Length: 430
Image (cartoon, rainbow, N blue to C red):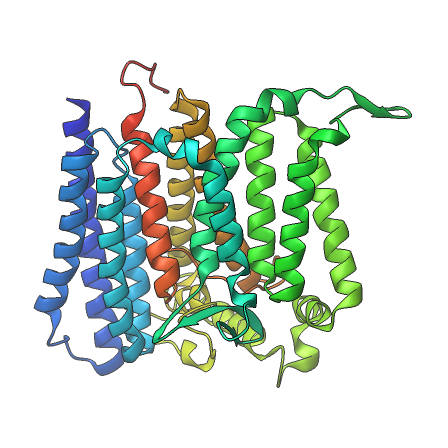
């Protein structure tokens, strides 16, 4: 009964997401050409077809799963596509193809993984695979440097970011490792002078390894966003597993120390921080995009200029890193806040799944996967609004990017599978 209710709720929300996406697509075309787009019917059929395929797969393969996640992801994906189509028609065609691949990956994940706990026994395989994916861009002849960051891999005609998949693989490893070791890591009997309740140094290996890996990504690949994301992911999962604030504090200190070292030793890190603090001193060059993004958000005001009536195309990375600035200009504070609320609802649903999970591995994996979505959204939105230094990562489900879109749909499927596997007799949360 509960499964049928959730799936019916999901279907209703998917239809609402499709209506909002269709309306936004029409308004963007009217704002740009004052004509209703001629491909409106095929567009509606494709949107409904993809979301219907994902819904039917969920109804058949994960009947008890959460009823909000898929609809929220579909809404963000649809809204992102509308802005990409409005800004760059060539990228829109590619994004539509990657959306279909992402939905296919979502369905395939639900088909292949019937119990997430089956992944737990392959923890060290996932560790090696994650490290391999993370370091793959450093392989000579394979790695590619784009926009100053060496995070791309070219295998024949296919270009992708292996880090997008590494974050999921490493989340599985972290959850598996900590599900087994969390009781040992929670024991804090070591002290330095008056400071007590510190973790034993012999158990700090995983934290130090995560710190070192994050520095490798930051320094060798010049990818500040992924470095912060991977390290924060491990520290958050470690904190959830042990319930010891000492690990959280130690992680923050380690990353702060590594960041200070990178800032003092490497020019590209100093440049990012300088642009964050004052983009106007080098507005014609390094600070141009961030400065124009600030102007876009200011032009949007409370209600925005209207879909198709703004000019976010002056931002070079308008469809990727700075798509949130385009949304802020044309939908204003109200529209951009709605996007943030959608991400908050996804994070809230993910944390609810983690709270209700009865198995340690499922609980930690759900917390880790949710942390990925939440942290990645915070890092890129915070960078655009100058809350934190700007880093080159995508806004999940919204920005253009095939690797990101496919990886996030796989992540979504894993969360749905965990939700579906929660013991039906567990006491529901209010």
